[in-house]
Amino acid sequence: MTETTPVTLSIVVPIYNEEEVIPEFYRRITDVMQQVGVTWELICVNDGSRDRSEELLLALHETDPRIKLVNFSRNFGQMIALTAGLDYADGDAVVVIDVDLQDPPELIAEMLEKWREGHEVVYAVRADRAGESPFKLWTANLFYRLLRRITDVDIPVDTGEFRLMDRRAVLTMRRLREHHRFMRGLSSWVGYRQTGVRYNRSERFAGDTKYPLGRMLRLTMDAITSFSYLPLRLGTYMGFTLAIVSLVGIAITIGLRLSGNNAFYGQATTLVAVLFLGGIQLIFLGILGEYLGRIYDEVKGRPLYIVSRAYGFAGRDDRKPTDLHR
Image: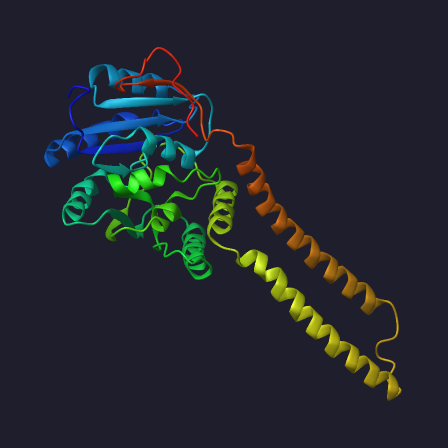
């Protein structure tokens, strides 16, 4: 395929230290696309890998021009890498997929069928998740259902980033430039005609997970603060609740004192009440801080990512850094 050939399908894959998986991922992607029979490109976003990932991707690019590479100047995170892939994609449809082969490339054929039927976003729904601990399954189940309850956006449960998007949806996504990004939420927010396809998620092919507990908690916080004001409203709800409880407590205390009951003498009750209210205040100050921190990041206006090199894109010099993208 030459650089001027129209691309039907762009496949975007973020990569961070995945040297063990890249060869097998490339083999399976090429096998699938050979069966599908459409023109395609594979956009690999190297998110500051410190292993041989860049070397392997450059070797693939040299032998197969459909493989294109975007190198970040440092690690910016998976959500930003996905954003960059969408920015560089030229296809009439774009598939976003992880490189670890937990999401099967073979599902792309079914996604394309749904797209041809007129659906503009086709997301993959995890019917089964092999190789994951009961704790991970329980927390994932809780996260998806909690998020759906507290947000106004209909984010499908049991889904990840694996999905196909029509070019119209991709162009809309390009206009959304917030720094703390929850991509599956944004792809639901843009609307369009959406549907899901179910699949069984496999174990990771090789290597270690890039989402340990700490990173999952940060992703959860990004998801909640991006699509819900409920944490802020909880402060108001809690304030009214405590005010009502306090009024009732005052009335009870006055009644007991007038009747001669000395049950509320002493400092222990006062100390417990002060510590309780102080803890509640600190919690909600922390919640306010999370939202203010995100506002601060947006106000600074820094670019979402910096590309050090890009290979395989028409009209750009592969030997020099590409322009910054906001």
